[in-house]
Image (cartoon, rainbow, N blue to C red; front, side):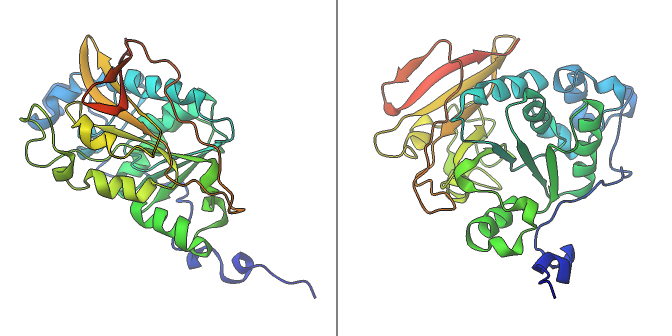
Length: 299
């Protein structure tokens, strides 16, 4: 008598995290066609809808909350292009805050990754992301959508792999994490230099601690304190920081942070190189020598 594996016996419901499957659009998944339909607090984002999703008119959907966090398409494409030069052994990308799918779509269409895991807590937002990826022609076999808390997923990936569906048990040595968390907290909009220790709902330490064993990219407010990011650099390494600009104005910065101790499934140190592929207007930061600054126009 052959031995059955764990998954065959207990089924996918036994796993703490598993692929979400295809989710239906809900009443919260909206495709606004005119300004008169749009709540006042997202009207400025609606006015920029073709910069956010150039194929918006094809049926792109967002929840009202998702408008605040979606990465503009030119910026998402630039980040995907900048990750082309990652270490060749890196084959998996995890989008820790998938939202309405802007970055996930760009990563999938770049052709760089063998497998993408896109995590989103809200079911309606995840349904929007799946809908939008179909509109953009993303190969459904490339992206595994997960509904859940990304911090819980990473804790399970590192400490309790058996609780994950087999498709989600990726090797951290071959994985890069992209994290575009919600931005908020005191001084986020008003301070000339934003204290990332006060960022809400997740501060810099929480984010870095969750991903430190993997190469990771943090997408942060453009005024973020470079000195705080520099402290995350492993000994003898520099952290490239790129300001992504549209029409001459910075929209956000991304910090490309190498793993602190990247161990593969065999327990050996893995190679690590995470740098933007092209870094125009490069300069070193005199006050933070562990950081390399650059500016990246996206249009």
